[in-house]
Length: 128
Image (cartoon, rainbow, N blue to C red; front, side):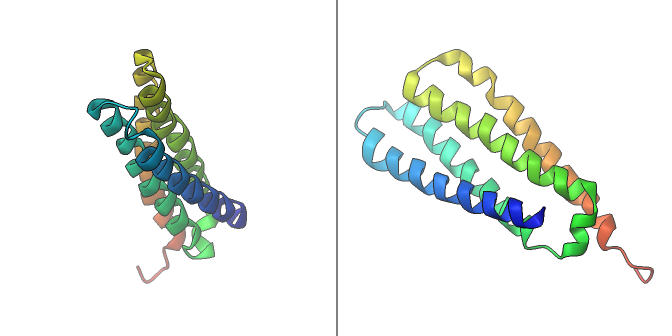
């Protein structure tokens, strides 16, 4: 399981670089300042959560005995798709209702971070 999510962390990181470069070199002259800021917010949070997923994957294997760690990984991915994905599409298409999807991604990320905190129990030892 950990190996699969590590692969996905790499894929998410690569996609973040691609969409970031596309925004900087392909969209800068096509989007107004406001929509460029929306797009850049998507890229920024995409990177943050790809790195968070990578860090989770590099945590001790004992952490992965917790269902919370697995759910954290899933929710980091889901959050990226909904939050960053909706911002990318909103910025490029101008379809305003897509902004209503973005909070679902943010909520998934909040839940992911809570799952990370809960997964710490898997690392507990009798001395702690």
